[in-house]
Length: 635
Ligand code: ADP
Ligand code: MG
View 1 (cartoon, rainbow, N blue to C red):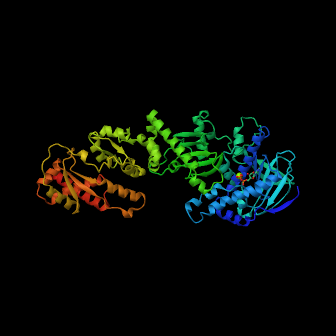
View 2: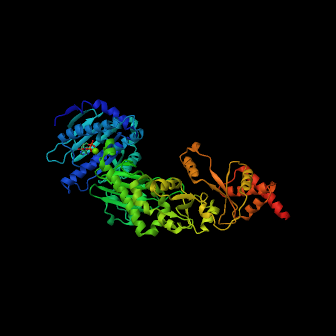
View 3: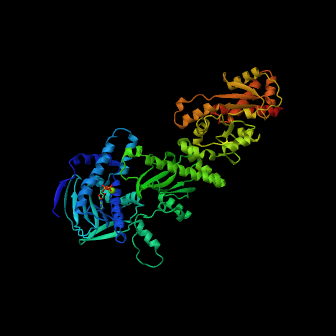
């Protein structure tokens, strides 16, 4: 061919600065782009001639001395015409339209800009890191001649004959000084492992160690690979073939019936660097109406009160796209760990595609449905297993139910409540067990140890108390009351907020309410306390503090969201048990120092069973206790 010089496009001058600016944070994406092009080239060859493509691979060479990073494939290659079309026009126009799309959103929606880099923009992304790029390529077509394309800035190029003698393409990047990290073999390996670990063609990372007498020494399979080789040996010192850095047939791409439990667990450990096994998993495998494969894992909860942090890796045709893309993966599913591969998902995606495309929405709905199906199926046929998982999966399920109406609809009969006695009950089961004694209400504890005394009041009467002690439960309880079934009058009350079911219809004496109220107010030092006189079923409790459920919840939410400044003063009332002997005595007695002291003690005792006393209050409480003990000793 005759040497050619040219400009990629008249607008090119405008685009390189934009590429550099926009993609600054995710530069390493160029490796994915170049390797995936090589992968495509080999896949194309496979389709033309399966035999010819056997053993084809991509080699990534790190040549620090020459400051070069080379990507070598033995795929279809390109003819001169193809370089003109595919590189000078196609690659450029792809980059251009991609950037135009994003440039529109500059300055707006800051949080969305973060995803730009993830998607890359094809071949041209190499100019983010290279100050000179060349392509040497020889097409598989008969009679084709090798072509060399070279450019320093992605704007102007030269084309001429190449010395390349074998089919395929070599992309040589002369790495610019500022981007030297990409000449570090470990850095390159890290990027390859991130983006290319499931690509369908074997990828080898070769480090060009040194240049001796103009002969290059190639070291294949450095680091991990080399170690693995020696482990593989079974005594005989036969040299092993170098290992590719990727798994060309990842487990998720296989048919579920061909995968064993051990393989699922191993895949989980490897992909997510986890030591602990997952609880269970869902293997997605759909061909129609869209192509979707993947595995979603339910991890064990790490810390009881800690947040859950999942990771959903999105792939497109075995090429990594990004983690946790909220447009594709329903937000609540990001609490899981998994890989999702949408083969029809383009690598170069625009924002409008993500936001408006029905395809993306359908994928998202499908995944939600599959997860719900798995859970409801397990609930119906393996209730015991489901109950065993509940303590680990309930925050995830509750979050999902609150976030996704469709998920809530499917899961509503499979929500469990764990009782203080370790039983797992659905809402309906709770209602039918307790409805008679406790109509339209569920009592719960947010801290079984602290609230033990109050819990007993219910369990002694045969009423189930459920444990709702996680951060998410504060929101969940309100969700259940107001959103899940707005018609229903069903309420959730913490053990110290419910009294109706504790009162007794047994005879109780008429006591002087005004006198007792005055006594309590004086003892507590609060003039505006609400005091009620009620016959409680349990005679041994003289005084209880009942806190208003709604106010408490409101304040808890304030704490969770760090908006405590809007908190309302705690609203509680004092209930005096008219069936308590102590209360009866205090009602009969003329008010004096001792009756105030005793009432004060009762009040603090009730307070103590709800929360620790403040230092000063505690000192006073102990002093008073000593006084009572001394007095008792004299009797
Ligand atoms: P895309 O891969 O989305 O088509 P790119 O900018 O990555 O866009 O690449 C542009 C085109 O250049 C590819 O479609 C392909 O035709 C050609 N190409 C790039 N790299 C290679 C390669 N290693 N072998 C053969 N053709 C290639
Ligand atoms: Mg590409």
